[in-house]
Picture 1 (tube, rainbow, N blue to C red):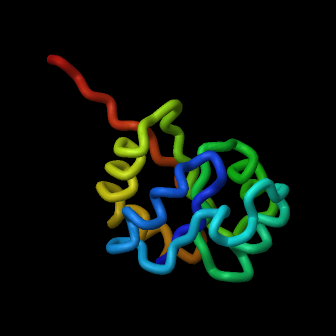
Picture 2 (cartoon, helix red, strand yellow):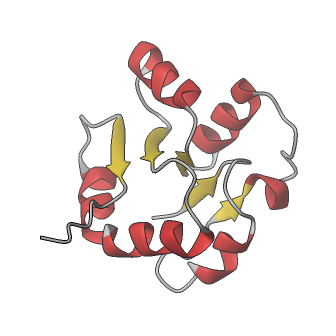
Length: 117
């Protein structure tokens, strides 16, 4: 299970998550920095990546065209790199099941709500 990390995510995620998501790439390291959405979409599909993005563009494209690629839509707003790492690590089992589900096309992941109660 490998991730293609969109431009709106830190390129540092690639190395930090390599132990749990081996062979993942950031678009920068895939030669796609500044590429249009269609090029990133096609690259993810052709190379069997789960495409991870904070943008709604890929989510909307998945509604129209389905998979591949499968989309992980991070609905986490302005989050730190460490918060993004924590979400992708803590949701590993959910992401694995999503990757294995032949009918699934997108997976929204939300920032956890922390209550003081």
